[in-house]
Length: 222
Length: 222
DNA sequence: CGTTAAAATTAGTCTTAACTAAAAATAGCT
DNA sequence: AGCTATTTTTAGTTAAGACTAATTTTAACG
Image 1 (cartoon, chains in turn purple, cyan, green, red):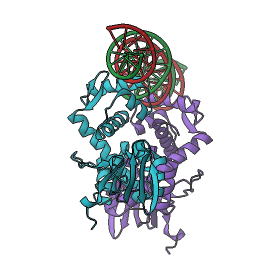
Image 2 (cartoon, each protein chain N blue to C red):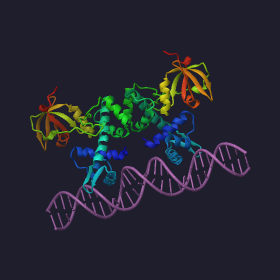
Image 3 (cartoon, each protein chain N blue to C red):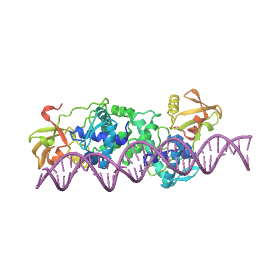
Image 4 (tube, rainbow over the protein chains, first blue to last red):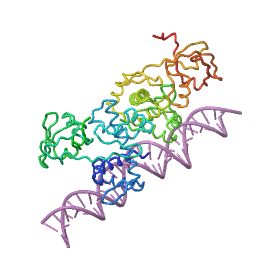
């Protein structure tokens, strides 16, 4: 196992690559709340450990070994998020911050027990896929809310887990994974207007961009 | 909250004082698997933080502030031991080592949730009292197995949690807290011979010393 | 194409908590 | 009491991972 700091960096680098964003010095610094200089130091260390490819002034990319290590951390993280929500009733806006701490102390044995207690789940409370133990992740060919045409009815698949205030707001509206909603209008400046449970509401573009959905026609409800 | 290292030292100093043993440099070094020099350094740091009184060449004693901090760590430790055993089915010989890691990442909120999920328990799986949130611990006016007269029937109250192999052995014999046994003979050199569930077995003195019991006459079974 | 702003890197420092090796203090034994 | 073995402490080092300040590289724009 790697140090806690290394695991944190790997988790965040993965989180960026997962969304096709570049893992740059300044982005990591903002996400981990450290200075840019600290990030550069760690990038060098990760590169020396063959966990990332560091292109100076460009950013890093996970190597196969780095991806494997990152997926282990992410698996721990998402399993714990779900466990806290299911077993201890922790609200979904708090599970991310707690899991960030717990993920570093989870032994393989405890991982197995939690996995079994949850019935071998496949997604976190926010709808993110839980990597398997051997390091594979489900594809996510989903679209963001802000790319959709008015009139469409869609089902929420996943929402970003990192903004507690936003999660509380979405929770109030009932915008959890598996919730269905209709797009009323969509405008890159004014945001997305949608109807959920008969209620209309507006989400800003930067919010709508982090909500992933699937067309209802594609997944007939059982 | 204090650093993980400080919490580990406080926990072990408390564990010694709880058994009326002196918290010396070498004892702590053995328990925490560090060198004596490291312990001396930490003793100075703890003394500077007013958590212990350090008498050079003699050892340390927890101050009121140190005791309070130690009891918080011990509360976390024992709550987690019980939670792992009850909720995840972890065998009682493994819960100590796992709890040693988990105790450092437990927020107050999670502590409350775990406490509630367990129904506000008062003892760990090994029978050790769980300190309350405000820092009080139940008295333990119990005797060790090796102090008893033959013929007595007693109930196990508590066993030491730190030797997994011993715990597995005791588990095989059914020697859990609340188990009843009869003293067959007791000898400081040969150890304690006892009968439990109709089976006779012998425990060495150093083992018997760490098993705490209460006379059955004192506690009529409901 | 050169100037400037932003981003990244370097150089050097700090803290925590370990370590080794050497010196000092205590305890045990005759 | 005095010698020896053990224990403890001191002194100095190391590693991780953060930091600041200064410098270099890249990107953007007139």
